[in-house]
Amino acid sequence: MRPLAKGLRIAVIVSMLVISAALIYPQLSPGAFRPDFGVFWTAARIAQTDPIRIYDVVAMTEAQRWLTDPANGPRPFAYPPSALILFAPFSVLPFLPAFALWTALSLAAFAMATQRFVDWRGTALCLAAPPVVLAVLTGQVALLVASATITALAQIERRPILAGALFGLGAAVKPQALLLAPLALVRGGHWSSLAAAIVTGSAMVGASLMWDPELWRIWLNAIAGFQTITTGLGLDTAALTPASAATMMGLSSGARMAFIGAGAVTGITLTWWGFAERDLTRPLAGLANRGQARRFAESHDR
Image 1 (cartoon, one colour):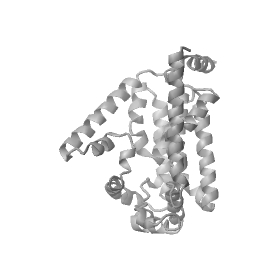
Image 2 (cartoon, helix red, strand yellow):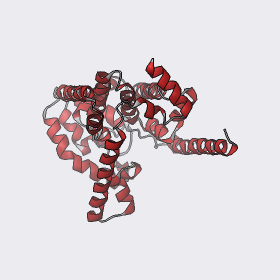
Image 3 (cartoon, rainbow, N blue to C red):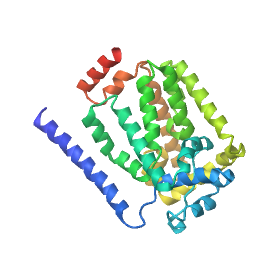
Image 4 (tube, rainbow, N blue to C red):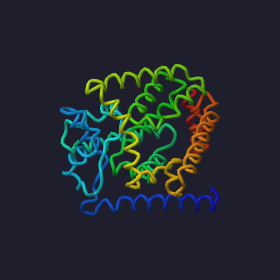
């Protein structure tokens, strides 16, 4: 490796670790520990006895008083009812053991997914990356959804049904993260995966009806309110989306809609172009480095 390239790589790694440390430090101060997992765990517990209340922002915030003062802001449960299937098993445990188990499973799943494309050193760096550190600190669902998506993309040619099932599971938990997945599957001609995703997602929706079928109508009606809450708290600016970018730039309503529309068109176009390749394993492995891509391709061919 050339000295300049090596120096740049070291600089990137050091910068990444410094940013990750900066994310961890504030969480060590008293009262700063307010993980998103507290919302998931509380919603799953409330759903056992009074599921309608999980989309009542006031009730949910008050139910988390033991974790954070309501004066710190609302704590709504914004996920669809189908996500309760993932959170429910953890609600049978006390909060801290449940959070520890959730974190361990999330890290293990993400490490296993990334190791399909990089060696152990690459996996270690992935786990130390700022977005991953932030997801771990707050107990976000992003790591599990990302793990399912990465594994699905890696298995889509060899195990299309499994890949589709993973897409369906991820979409049932966090639908906005996989909004363009059906378009990608259609573009790549992955019809078996698309069918498996639809069946799996539908099964998750059907299973969620055991709490209360009315939950879906309530959730759909509450989506706009959740967006208002996240904007008011400044949470949407942490996400790299056209909507958050428009918020940070302070665009007017008309310009905001145009900007979001342009972002949607760009996303659709890139998805259509990027998934023209049927076998996605080689281009995905190529995101790591050439040597890793070659080794992955050789093992995949076997």
